[in-house]
Image (cartoon, rainbow, N blue to C red; front, side, top):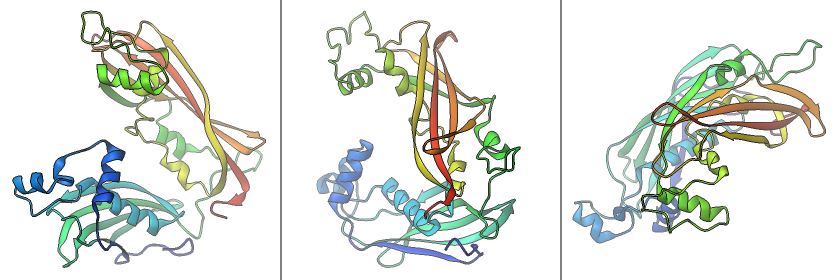
Length: 313
């Protein structure tokens, strides 16, 4: 698919082929996701489980399907959903091939919603993974142009962005348990020493003030409401964190079971040296198991766009 064509029912996607999966592929994957199940690298462990050999991780194959879709879309759209069912194992050393086909296309204003059937097949053409995906693409005849502001200039913020962020309403609610090992790794990562002398005693160690960032569902990729920004047709020129604020009612401690409620505030934009700046601000309210407020944090993020340059050019 290109920026000048629309997807049609029956369009084939791929194939994307890995001719010989290797243990190196799986070692890299294991390191990335912290999953060291021995059936993915130990032949004896795989045989003990009744498997024909060391097998490829299922999520690795799902990631291959995701790459198939993003390669096909290019910069014209985004993947909004992917569901996989693992039917048969693939043995390391074999060929795996990702493929798909467009099953439905519907219009939504300046965009098209695309449903796909996707699958992984082995070297013999047998499907070992089957699934479905949903995509969102800009219609080539409109380019997905954003709304204009009151002065006729291009604007980045519209009702669709506000709706996607659920501005002013609860955007998500997630519960996390603060474990001693997680806290120790965090303290080590930021340059300090884990408070080993208190771990496991009746006096629980307290988390450092910056630990609130670990509890942010957006940074953990568990809450993703900003995919719509990928559909803006302007070239990005920069972006990053704008600010972080946190107020504690009490310290966070090992053993705490904390519920984080995320709410987006009204986004805003302004002109800057890097172009038009789009700000999104979210608030996380952190409650303990008794419903008492533990902390409240606000995080601002900014993206810069060149309104005179089309994305990808």
